[in-house]
Length: 329
Image 1 (tube, helix red, strand yellow):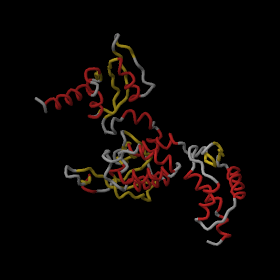
Image 2: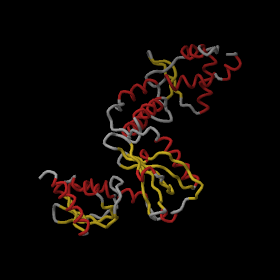
Image 3: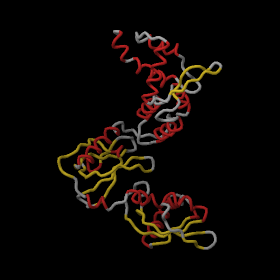
Image 4: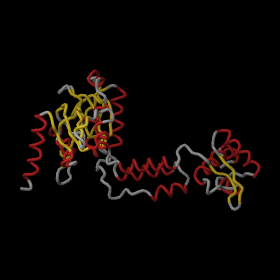
């Protein structure tokens, strides 16, 4: 590399080295920086390194100097992401079912580059990806891009939608025919990614699992259903739909043991009204999508939860429980 072009890159090489190899426990010395620059055919003197450090500080890089015992040199004191924040990102990526294991590993390797090499080793120690439940659809990244293209362009999208058979093969719904809907949002529920869209044929807001969508393309047809989406509160919608299962929305009244108040607030929201019912129970009323997943949520609390009304929903739950009990008679 010619000396002139190398000198232009000198500050960048020093900054990269500090970001990758320095932290409070591992300061780097001017000698190390000079040796690193030499690997790029850049000659440097100690005084010029001091000037470069000051230039990087002026630029905004938080560089501290230490000179105590065996610790001597410079290190980056604060970064764009602190280690606890990176750990949170790693936890989110590795616990996400909609990201395949291969993509999970690739994403975590990229996250590690945001820390020093020493902190990156700490991140690696907490990574437990193998064996976690992950999607088998590698195209989810491209699916998200295609959906965003439809949303930002205000266009309908078309796609095919599938489910897995017992042999883990794809079976397309509607015999492989394309769905055409107006996309409006992406939402995360129960560790899965969903697209919320308006379906013109049924005049309803519907949702689709992104990892089960294929062959997504934006059409030239403008979206419709804007009024239906504007009247939809996504936070409320997510509370109503259990496991993103479709069903009929109804106002239900529920009775719980007092120790379940936290679980009820987590699921139905902090604004739900809690009415005491004796010393050991309380009741709540909420709008929910009545579905098998909703019944399963209630059944998970055993005798400490009860569906009281309306009678139509109670009858459905009674049939749901009887059907399960019939398997064990």
